[in-house]
Image 1: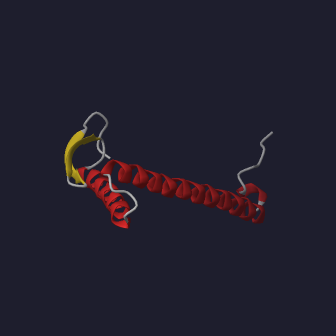
Image 2: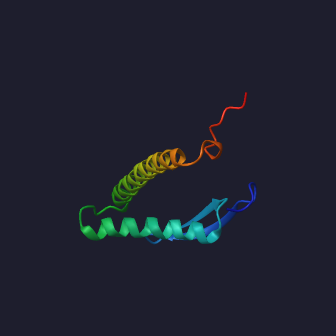
Image 3: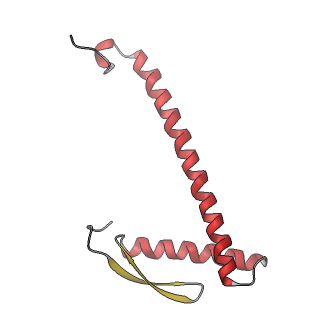
Amino acid sequence: MTDKGSKQVVRVSIVGEEYSIRSDSTPEHTRAVAEYVDAAIRRVLSAGGAVETRKAAILAALQITDQLFQAQQASEELTGAMRSLGSEVRRWLPPAKRGDVTVV
């Protein structure tokens, strides 16, 4: 990420259409995101289910959103497992090292 307020304009191509994207992200990141979206739309178009680019873009957006939701769920599950493991390890530590000592 670049400094806040220093948005950069990056030209990208998505399904043959040129776009100028203004973003706080690096140009490389912005191009990578555009390439991912382009590939997702092209996969939908090549599957033959949608002939219109607009409809293919919507279907690709749904697929990308599903991937995002699955990644968020996996992240939440991993966070829960790490907290559980942390609690388990904390019980093995001597009381002074557990971080839950109450000073009177």
